[in-house]
Amino acid sequence: MAKPFFRLQKILRRTQFLLFFLTAAYLMAGSLLLLQSSRSVILQSIRGASSVQAVPGSGMVLEDHMLETKTVQNEHFTPHVLVDMKWIHAPVTSPQADQRYGPRWLISRNSELRQLRRRWFHSFMNDRDQRKGAKQELKHTAINKGTYIGCFSDDAGERTLKAAVFYDLWKMTVSHCQEACAERSYLYAGLEFGSECYCGNTLPQNRAKEVECNNECKGEKSSLCGGVNRLAVFRIEELRDIAKQRRNITYRGCHRAPANLTDAFPVSVLQSGLTVEMCSEFCSDKEFPLAIMRELDCYCGYRTMNFTMNHPEDELHCYGLVVNGSANANTPRDETYCTVYQTPVQDTRCTDRRFLSAKSKVFVALSSFPGAGNTWVRHLIEHATGFYTGSFYFDGALYNKGFKGEKDHWRSGRTICVKTHESGKREIEMFDSAILLIRNPYKALMAEFNRKCAGHLGYATEKNWKSKEWPDFVNSYASWWASHTLDWLNHSKNLLVVHYEELKKDLIHKLKEMVEFLHLEADHDRLLCVENNKDGNFKRSGAGPDLDPFTQEMKDLIDRHIRTVDEALKLRNLTGLPKEYALR
Image 1 (cartoon, helix red, strand yellow):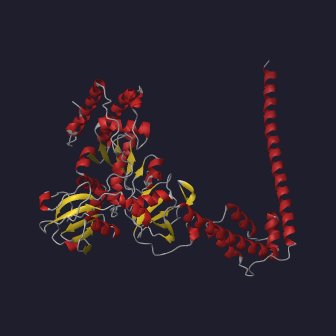
Image 2: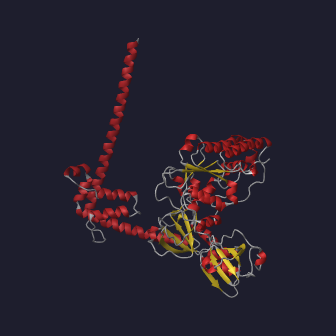
């Protein structure tokens, strides 16, 4: 009985091998036939082309290596053209190589055909560039609201349009950029790389070829938004005038003037009949965020350590009060005081960011429970240090809003610190040190639930809060809030604890602590700039639904975790949790 079984097994094995061999042979035969037929077609096309007597075009002939270099360097060539050119100009080293590559040998021998193909190629590319330039100009002039000025080179180190308003790799359009710059009282809007918007009142110096501003806008495929290190610049004077009509002047209070106003504020003007509107407009044109008035003098400048504006003086020291966001000419009673107004211009001293020039071998975590404000703190750190932060994950929404370190591997060493929500011993010990961000669990749970239901900027609906998903979420995530902090306290080698609420109350002092923990020297003027731009692109607008979604059972559970974490912090000689954490 066993013999017939083994015989059958042998036959099946042979059959499998035979089927595999036949399949392979069939595929090889098909490939050879296809190659032979394509070769025949190529040979026929060559014979037909060789019968052509003359083609109009330039008589100049380029050497092989010159044409190949031009082919590689021109970024506008299509893949098909590149393939064709490589096929035409492949090097021939020996008769054996000639026979091996077939048609290449024929073409390399036919110098007349080679010259004709070169002339045709140059003629085709020139016509193509001209057509593309004309089409590009049509798009700039016909679709967009502002007046198109031209394509300019952009130097990331010394930008002329230096007020980077925003990045958006999903929804950037020309109109969006123009309106954003007009709202901030700038005269020019520049778009770069299809997704970046820059503003300013001075045109860049170096013009570039129009064909180099060839990147389509990420949010509007029919329009062009600059190129690689190339700005498509628009003049938006009319839009700025429209925005000016609906813009109110922001009054920043009565302040003690610095000892030497000329040294403190680099630009000033003296004019009879000076008004707040005139001073604000003058400083906006000069690209300063503050307009300072003392008697009939108008000064423009920034917040500095000599003029922090952290302690406003009594309004009685200054004449005139702001009514509905505007005022008449306000002149201080005493020359030691001045009135300050916020212009629509953005403070740009902290907007530049870059990757680390030398790879760091020290990996610093920016750790938090989800919903504790990690994205906001990343924004603060990037602007305070000038370096991008990284992430243990990849969040496309964050990358599209300007967090360019988001897609770098967390161990690339190019970022100043790395976002993580991990809390296991192994995951924590991968980092050399960490900034641990802690937030009130009631607020953090609600923020994370909002994000899960409505994204980074939205709010969960009343239906979401009343669903079964919410109590399940609290039961599982409340314990995670506690275990996350406890794990980092137990396993981190070097830890800086930052409380979200204290950071909001005393931003500059706490942010300075974080910068120094990252082994960088804090730039005080840059920190003041961060305070002016503290919200970033991920602040939820509005207050959301006014409700208390926590049941008494949920509160009891969360309060137990609060007490546990508070005790653990104190055991490590750290400041305990703020008293307002519990809803007792």
